[in-house]
Image 1 (cartoon, helix red, strand yellow):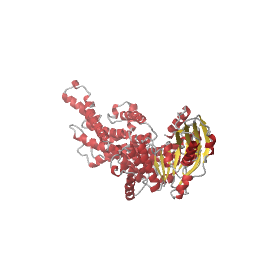
Image 2: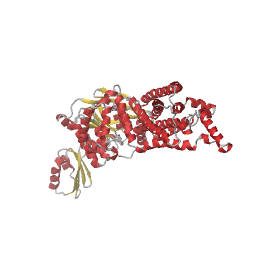
Image 3: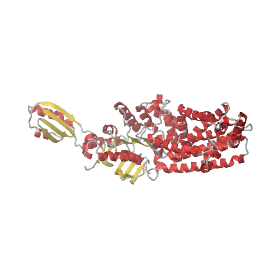
Image 4: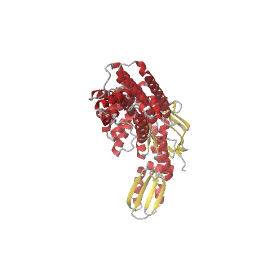
Length: 280
Length: 353
């Protein structure tokens, strides 16, 4: 199963690298989000500056950031964790895309008629998608650091914190890739996939703490946002960025949640896929 | 419904047996195989046949006849409703993985990955079939050379022509050296020249690599040119089976058409010639049905001149599989599809997905 999964994962990645447009868009989109969204929709700027003197205004902004945005030095720093999580959600959403095409072009039948483990068909898409999401997320992380008045790491931020951020994102990506790959397992049309992705993506995004803190939401939405895995990943990432070398126990709950999320969806998605690929 | 003709004598087939290309070992055995898709669509209806080792076996029929479904059943891609099929002694429904390991497939659709290079496509197949790397490399070289793709091996398949893709498709299914190769419409959509080139490669694979080939086709001339044995399938049933030559004998032989310069009654003379089975007269034109036209033509011409009559035109037609198809199914091969047949075909295509 390993040889087969690896061979099929390499196939996916080769195809990805050979389509520079897809790599470029995968990088470009989150950068635009950070640069434009972070500047244009900065919630701390929403308060009309005429209500107080500049000094008071600065204080108000600072206290908003402090109290509502978990002490982030600026909105972009708050936003980065959310954008990284979104980047992985969006790349994962199309993890079943190549499957739909393989089914359509008959490639899937050729795979099914070969003596490979059915799970390798599922796992190869999931793993390839995780790689396709993690590489841009690394680049976006460094890009956010390099833009003026961009991402500001806590001075005590260490390599371990960095690794923990990417572990968090990896788990999120693994879970969502499994979910979306399993959904696409029986699809024959690209259009249906796009419809499902659109149906799920935005609700998942807006019911999370990716863009705005949970405290700004009505109670019913807060209840959803609190169990949304995107919130868990965004919050954990944010904590690591803002607080630096944190006590692991602070993010342990989030990490455990994401480990369970990834494990359950990978196993359930794998089983669902094997059933979906059974001969009729 | 016309009576089905199952032929017992295998002339050409016997030749191939004598040359040792085909052995008496049966590699595919199919008994009363039936496939009913959801919605009670009977795609394959109680068919039985055997394919001997080394044979090039053709499954001939129009679209929607049940050819692709049969291949899907034999290659473990669809489940059997009733009946039994074994490939190399492995039961298709009980030991699917054993079957998968020992067969190669060339599907109807072009399933080569466009965004990979030629050799990458084959190496990927080698990995999926667990062919050790060093063994695979040698085989890939040999196979690429066999179909003349050595120079193009390092190019993305998206730059290949249709014929090149099909050639690559033929060898991708062979890298694990399967004993049996299933080909579904191997020359569908190719131009006449390319089709002939593919035919040559198929013959070569069959002979050089000693691969038993089971192929489907809706081109009568393809079955005629390539196959040792062909089975004519229509609406899920096998209507006739035998070597192309034998199938043509169902028609009862060849036909000489002679137009005389003026009307004369030569009925008795023509009937007296050896091998003549039937004589039809239409004005000054005669249609003579007989076993071998070439042998009888000199005697016919001599006799006509001896009777003081002149020939205006003479033509000779050999039976084609088209006529055989008409004879055994009671309909033209390429006739307009009836609404019922069309919807049946759509159903099958939709079901098999």
